[in-house]
Image (cartoon, rainbow, N blue to C red):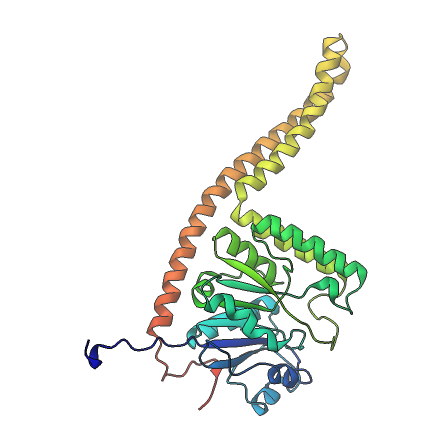
Length: 339
């Protein structure tokens, strides 16, 4: 074989670490300093922050400490939308692997090589950092139990085996990021896992470390509020991907409730006292009709679900075409990077 025909070594994958930020001027420097810039098996490591309408000096601090790219929201849009903005920006900038971490330095940046290893070795497409919450000192007993219960519910809904479902420390391959469509306005963590499970993406987890607590969470005001919004997100996402199953269950429950007064009427009618219990027949019949209507709604929703899948496939192809046509020498408009 001639030298000209020799195979060139494969390009090492570019890793982007994205950091959603809202008023993180005090914790951002430590978060960025904790991120390794040289990872075995990977190429360049770039850092991108998404400023979600901060009112402090987050952007100025980011420039001073030398982050590679800055994306800005003029107004506060919430964590899920900020995460989605970061994914789109990383894809446009040529990321092969995207790591998401928090701006409050909750997660140990030194564990990023461990986090992306399954992706580099083509063993997984999404890797979630397991904080091993039962070992986290500043988590209360109630919070540890709720984390365990919530993760169990997400595992059941998504079909994935992830012990720490709400961990925001996660790595995503380029191909997986192309397929994700985050629509929630609250938290992307649960939605991503349900989507990944229903799209049969390879999802795994690795144990990671955490740093001491620097501030209270801004994602929710109280534990009950977090539970409420998480449950709503989980039910909504599951119903989006399994509508027939959800509405069939709802219709079955309503139908069974309606069967009770109907059977009551039948009993009294059989013993010759049905005249005084017609209201049971009417009430039960109304519930049975409602259950049947719920089942019909499930059939319609299931047809809509197939249409949504076609739309998602079209969106994925459009996204791939848009990213493929981008010229690295052209400005990205809303992305501030090196001149």
